[in-house]
Amino acid sequence: DQTGRRLRLHHTRARAERLTTRPFGGGGIICGDSNGAGTLTLNGVTVDGNTATQGPGGGIASGARGNLTITNSTISNNTASSTSSGEGGGVYFLAQGPEQLTITNSTISGNRAGRTGANVGGGVYASAIGGATTIQRTHFVNNRAADTLRAPTGQGGAIAHLNGTLNVSWIRRVRYGGLWRDGGDVPLGETDERYDVEVVDAEGAIVRTATV
Image (tube, rainbow, N blue to C red; front, side, top):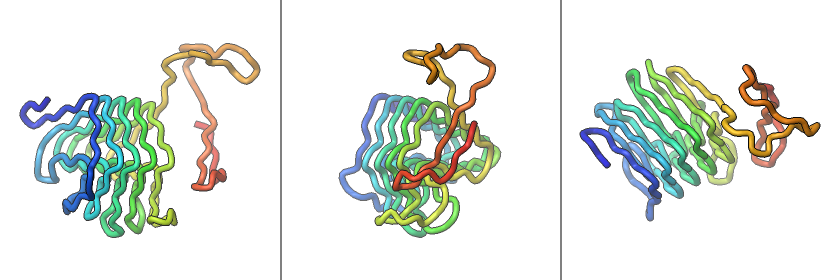
């Protein structure tokens, strides 16, 4: 439903049948521009297989002065192919005020951003001056800042964040089948959790490890 300048999409699939030629981008969904206003909310939506050829945001481009909220959704196999402006293969979010990008319980996978240079964002590109980007319980899988031959061209294969606050978290909500390696039960309600994280390249080789 659409009320005023708010657009909500629920349990929808967005897929382009041809390449977009919009100069601002947004292969699957485009919301506003840097001079506009609006709020976009996606819940249970799949944005898959779209391409922006002349701008950012292969799947979604939001340049509105409003919030972008993605929940229980899949942003997959989208491409921002331009070598000069192809940022945010899956999601491109640009805001000039206190706007918020929030992604929760979602999957960002198989997206590609083709711009050459720093801060490209194969999965997500976020810049919110005075605002915040919050990502919770979301999987980033096989996103690339690369050309068509998968050769790296930029930085931020999963996320490129430029301005504002970035909050990334994973909070375990259930304990179904949750056992430690030694067979002990995993407790609920602990005050602190730590996870071993491995960053791998396109061939599956581990390039960095961290405990978070």
